[in-house]
Length: 93
Image 1: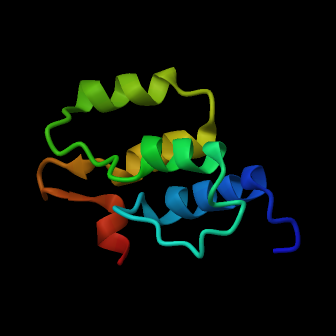
Image 2 (image 1 turned 90 degrees about the vertical axis):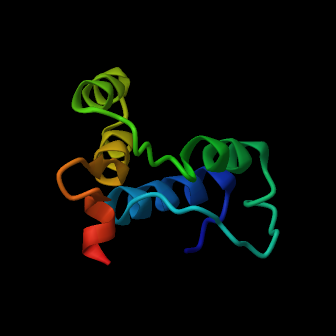
């Protein structure tokens, strides 16, 4: 990735999270793009975003509030399915 600004890094990480689900922890080399307030806010908002107690209406409501389609996928894929007690992203691993 040529452009390593915080906004670009966050955009790329969002796509990975949407495809594979949110992670519990991000480990970086403390480069400037990972040390920015934008990246830290993104990590605070999205790491460990699994909500095991969430029911279908909670998840639907959270998804409907989002304008960002990638964030909708992140929520959908990181929320456990009640019948199998596992998120869709965990099934992909």
